[in-house]
Length: 124
Image (cartoon, rainbow, N blue to C red; front, side):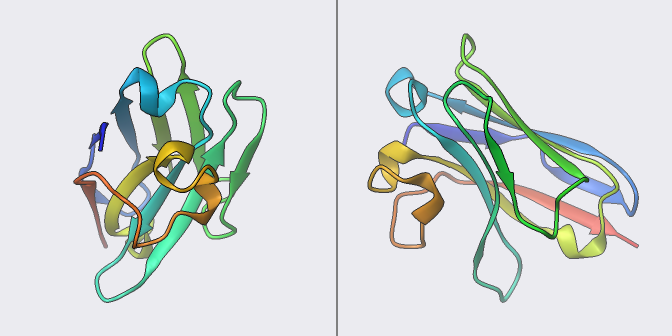
């Protein structure tokens, strides 16, 4: 999997973090990209997605108005700006691409290929 997530860490409630996902040309170019997360003991959850050009985005209700997905196509990097973090945002965060999810990143599931992810821990 040619994806590498970074930027996670420990932050207090209300804090911010910016996640990055560095991708190969093949995994990034002309692919819709998305962020997912898996909290302890819970299933994989969709967080946000973005179109190739960046003009279209979609968010889970739980992060709407707090998280912003963006991409730099020159740098082949996907970002997730997370503000006003809550304890329930604690999870391992993963990025993925149309390439690894049968051509439709919104349908990524646990049976598709994933990177190592980056841990986000929000303390109260």
